[in-house]
Structures are given as C-alpha cells and as structure tokens.
Amino acid sequence: MSGVIEIILIFLILANLILLGASRLRNAIRIVAWQGLVLGLMPLLAHRDGLVWAAILLGAGSAGIKGFVFPALLNRALRETQASREIEPFVGYVLSLLAGVGVLALSVWFGSRLPLPWPPASNLLVPAGMFTVWTGLFLIVTRRKAITQVLGYVVLENGIFTLGMVLVEAMPLLVELGVLLDIFVAVFVMGIIVFNINREFDHIDSDQLAALKEGGP
Amino acid sequence: MNAASSLHPVLALLLAPLLPGVINRIKALFGGRRGPPLLQLYFDLWKLFRKGAVYSRTTTWVFRAGPLVNFACLVAALALLPLGRVAAPVSFAGDLVLLAYLLGLGRFATVAAALDTGSSFEGMGASREVQFAVFAEPALLAGLAALAHATQSLSLSGMYAAWPAATLPVLALLGAGLFILFLAENCRMPVDDPNTHLELTMIHEVMVLDHGGVDFGFVLWGSALKLWVLGALLAGLLPPPATGHPLADLAVGAGWLLALAAATGAVESVMARVRLLRVPQLLVGAGVLCALGLLLTFR
Image (cartoon, rainbow over all chains, first blue to last red; front, side, top):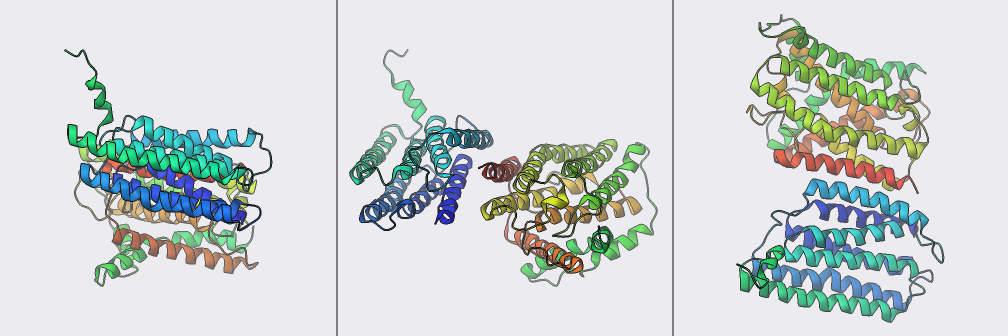
C-alpha cells in the first residue's frame, strides 16, 4: 500500500514541477486535472481501515469535481477568452523551477520536524502536501493570466487535501466535503468572472486591473 | 579487480564507434531508408587516421592539443568507469568527482581549441557549449550525489555494485534525469542536431569544423567514447543484479549500451529539436529530477 502512495506522491511532486515550468494553459489544466484524479485514490489507500464509505465518497467526489468538472469549466473559460499561453510571468520558468526545488527541500526539512499525532501513511506525505500548497501559492502570486491563478487555487486545494490525508481517520467527512464545496463554488464563480473580465477588457491580465483605480490622470 | 574489469576499457575503446552506427541505423529505419553501414564510423576513422592534418596559420598549440586532451580525458574516465555490475579497474572514494571534472576538462580543451581558431561561428558554438554545461554539470553531480547517498558509497564502482540498492522511484527519477543529460551532453536531438550543417544552430559540430585528418579522427572517436561513458552511468541503474560471472555482467552492460543507442535513435527520429532558448529549461528539468531523487534519499 505505502508503495502505491509513494508513487502517487512522487507523481504529485513531478506534476507541480511541470506546472512551474509549463507555459501552455491547456496543458496546465490537463496536469491539474490528472493531479485531482490521482489524488482521489489517496483516501482509499491512506485510510487505515481500508475501504470505508466515507473514504470512497470523499475520493470519488474529489476526483469527479477536480478531474472532470473543473477542467471542463476552465477549458470553457479558455475557449471564450482565446488565451492559449502565459505570455510573461513575473518570475521566469527556469527561475520558477529552481524556486520549486528550493521550496521542495524546505518542505522535506519541515516535514521531518513537524510533530504529528500519529505516523502518516508515508514519510513523503507531509513534504509533498506542503510543496503542493506552496506551488499553488507561487502560481497565484507570479502568473499574470487569471486562469493560471485559478489553477494555482486548485493546486493549493490539492495540497490541503494531501495534508488532510495525515488526519484522514480523524477528520469528519463533512469538513472535507465542505472544503470541496467551497472550492467548487469558488472555481465556478471565478470561471464566470474570468469570462466577464475578458468581455469587458478584451484580456485577462489581472495585473492591469490595477489601472482601474480612481483618481488617475 | 578481475579480468572483466581490466577488459572493460579495452572493450570500450574498440566498441564505442559502434554506438553512433546503431543510432544512425535506427534513424534510417524510422525514416524508411537503408542507412549507412553499422561499421561506418570504423571506416571513417580508418580513412582519417591515414591522412595528414592541415593547420591554419592563426592557430597555436592550443588548437592542436584540443582533440588529444579531450580524448585523453575520456580514456582516463574509462579507467574510473564501472559498466553495469562490473567494477572499474581504478576506484577510490570520491572518484565520481574526478569523473565529472575529467569530462569538464575534456570540454574545456574542445572549447579552447574552437576559440583558438578565431572563427566567429566556432566562438558561438563554444559559447553555447559552455552555457549548457553550466546547467548540465550540477545535474550530473546531483544525480551522482543521490546515488552515493542511497548506496552509502563514495566510489563509482561501489555505487553501481548492487541493484536495487536505492528504492525504485529514486532510480526511475535518476534514470530520467540522466537520460536527458546523456542526450544533451552528446549533442543528440532535443538539444542539438548532429546532422545539421547550418552553422548558426550547431553546437558541437561547429566547434570542430576546423579540425581535419588525424585530429578529426580523434574528435569522432572521442564523441563516441563520450556516448559510452555517459551511457555507462545510465546503464548501471538498470537491472539485473550481479550474476556472479564477471564476463556475463560485462556482456549485459554492453547490451544495455546498445539498447540505449537504439533508444537514442528512436528519440531522435520522433522528436524535434527544442528552441535554443528552451534548452536551459530542459537541462534545469534534468537537474530537478536528479535533485528530487537526492531529496528522496534523505528520508
């Protein structure tokens, strides 16, 4: 079991690194979708009692929403805005990758020091989850296109979901489903906002929204 | 040290020119052509070694030393290099660093010779070669460091002596990273096109444009040896564990090298070259894979 978990977590880390270096939005959406799908397996594997209804429900719900609903929403937004790639991120791709490795090392160090109520399913669980959270934040902060920022938000949730696997027996199902619902509504709303920003301003460069403030020349 | 260990450098010197032949045959197969004979590089070497060399009056001893120093470095690297489960003739703690620096010294000699000609095109090729080396060398060292940490051994022969010494995911990451590095260092497809004849886009080929005759023979043989050296670093990551018969291990290692050459030919047939600006990103990716492997061994 822990071997499979380990492979999933390594996949998660590699997907994060690809996201940090990828410029095509369609590819980025696909990678995040795969991340969500594969993470759907985690509750089943990490739960100590094996196949429990709560774990199955959680896994299926999360995989369904992140693997199918989000990509469909985002692809629709992408089609309507006709943006195909991130043009000039605030931090370049090579630098993003190097920053990713640095943050990964930091996460591994931090994961080895974090006191946990009980040993997690895999030693890699906490570092991988933390790294995914940081990757999501990094994407939100350093990319210009609104769609990439939404993707960063979903990646951030993937990280929180992975960290939640440490407490999979203790965390009530309702909490997890609540988080999932929050994210769902957020992405739904953001998909619509992206569309509206685009209709109003002919682009989705969020940093140019700063020019909207009043009292300009 | 046994018979197989001392046999390996000799075998490498003799068989290395076969690897480019295999690559070219596979590429021809994908292209639906018959392709050059498997032994083409041997014929080329035989032809070149019977020729004299012509030297431009602007060049100095640096230019003449280039191919020889590069070749000598690679032969010295062969002495440190285990192939598969076969230990190297010479091994001591820390020889992985010496291997990396022998490759670096060979590269320096080639680059210095290219700059010595005063040709602007060769200067461009030299500049690219060292620019990519800046990204490739940390990746190689990170990969070797990961192996050293996983096996708790500081010599190359010790690192490759057993399999699977490291856990499987680590080996897979290192294998992927080293394969990208293998393609980049040998100027194969996603990074450089060995068949190109447009000076503006060449990297390795442009640096050796002014070499002729015997010198060019050593350049060609040297690049075949470099395929062998970096390929052996990769082949050691692959199964099977030691069989107990050194000669059988040696045969398995050589077989993996031929398979690697075939894989290189396949990659070259199906992939286009990436833009020059994207090459550093590819190499940083290789470095990231190796660094990730290193991090995974720290748990």
